[in-house]
Amino acid sequence: MPKGYWIVRVDVPDPEKYKPYLAANAKPLKKYGARFIVRAGRFENPEGSSRSRNAVIEFPSYQAAIDCWHSAEYQEVLKLRQSVSTADLVIIEGYDGPQPA
Image 1 (cartoon, rainbow, N blue to C red):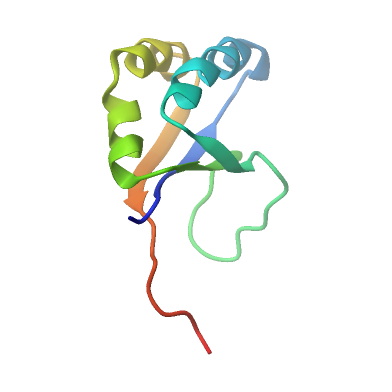
Image 2 (cartoon, rainbow, N blue to C red):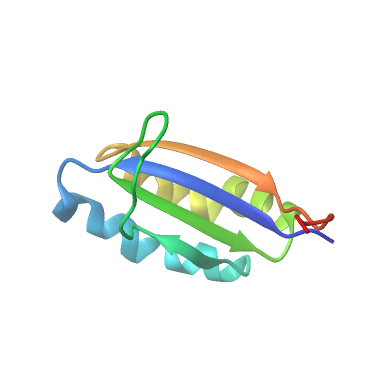
């Protein structure tokens, strides 16, 4: 079964106001088996638009990624982020097919 991912791009005007969200999101993410693959590291943006922070969060399955987003726990935590940031978030199924040779 392919894994699921959240691909998140966020602008955070005031990082201090964002900290409560960062602290609170750990509980629902852990409950659904999430782990950070990318979390606000250095990046280049050679094409298209970008935001100031980027994250890729891996879940054990696409369904777990969907369930976490829709969970009451995460929806409550989300309120902490929405008022202090602007984000784009995509939930996507991983790929288990052939790779470049």
